[in-house]
Image (spheres, rainbow, N blue to C red):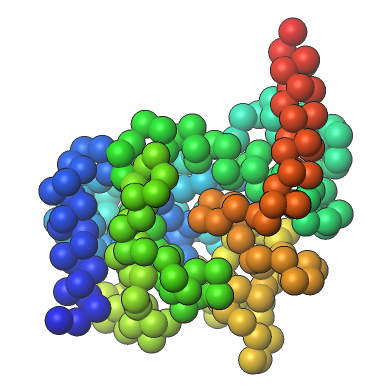
Length: 246
Ligand code: SF4
């Protein structure tokens, strides 16, 4: 059985088990487009969602348009709470992520983790394109993770970068223009750069941080100490957002 067959069978089982309560979550990197392509062939009704943080690169917005046009779908943009963003920016400025891991995690919380949690509460399961070889923190992910309140399914967990590339080329899938510029992992515009020869696949994410996990909290939580600091910062931001509603 090839990796493509395995992914197809995982997707078929997910569609059978979760039906209309299944969604695709993607940031429009190559893996996400592979998932969309595999799913659209068998279940074109499954919604495709992305988190529009408000800081996405233009190339990602172009990718959303390209995918919408190719599959005749409308991608759902999950957006952060504007009051929370305003309160955070008023407290720490628009580029707070450069001021330490805790503030970076606060930004990821407000712009990504919290909006996604609100949306995921409305579905039973979601499909992602994460792979085990992308980083150390992802090396032991399960294909089907039932540990959270929403089941997370990663049909490409055992795919290599070559598998992804081969499928992308064979199917002539749209690709972000940033890959040609040396990017190997693509996130928000101010937090991602191209990688240098020999660097890890996710080294271009939050490149100014030393020793921190290259994760935004969507798939893995920050360590306990950072998490407690983020909790305090987040509470302050939420209080400020709440206050400005009164
Ligand atoms: S990746 Fe950067 S801009 Fe995007 S949510 Fe995280 S810290 Fe904020």
